[in-house]
Image (cartoon, rainbow, N blue to C red; front, side, top):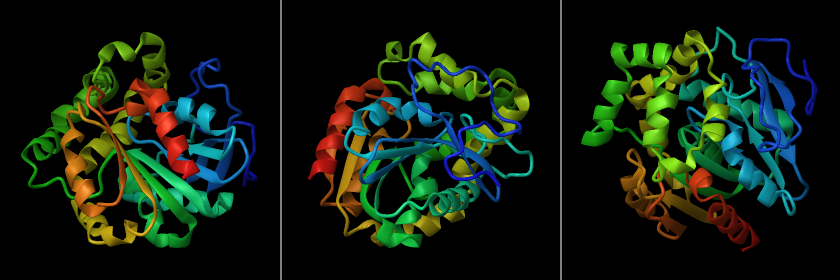
Length: 300
């Protein structure tokens, strides 16, 4: 088993396309948990901040925040199994439930205690259970365009879920890399900010049909397929209260832009940063504003 902090890549199936180290200038580390080897970055010293990505991205989406926060904090940003530079095994289900269990094992194995949790997109339903399974460890919470409830009943999101889970979309994901080539650009408020160089760092992580179907489409299908799991999270929403919380929201997000109000009803005391012209990836579209908001939140 790989020791915590090992810097050599695993001898297993993972996306080995070159990484732009000028944009992502961090030491790569790998940590073995029972389901496979997870890649992560661990930069700086001080109180830990755990950054959790969604789909179809990886820890690269947090690169600006890692660089901004590491001067004062220890910043840990893992890649979920199958994403980024983490191992991509063929016997892992790649559902949000499986990722959540795996992330808990990662936190335990790394020995993280009393940390700020920052989640984006699927990072919500994957990482927010840490707030009740490891309650005392999560001291502060920041949520960026994410959710943790059933999407049924919301006409727009339920329709998206039905389409995403269809055989037609499975074909589009597998053969055309639809998630990254079409959905990702569409979710930006300003598509010009998704440059070819940045887009390449995401596209090249999924070079084959199998990986796009097994890893990416698994979460697309889970939008409705994991409905019972989301409902179980929603029933425990009160467990999120009692800790300082920051909501960072791109209001032009075609999926979750309108969901900010629901979070405000759950967490009425949360600080809120609204970004009216920003889409699904505030940390990519407005990295300086997001980093500054996190720094100010952490200092308080």
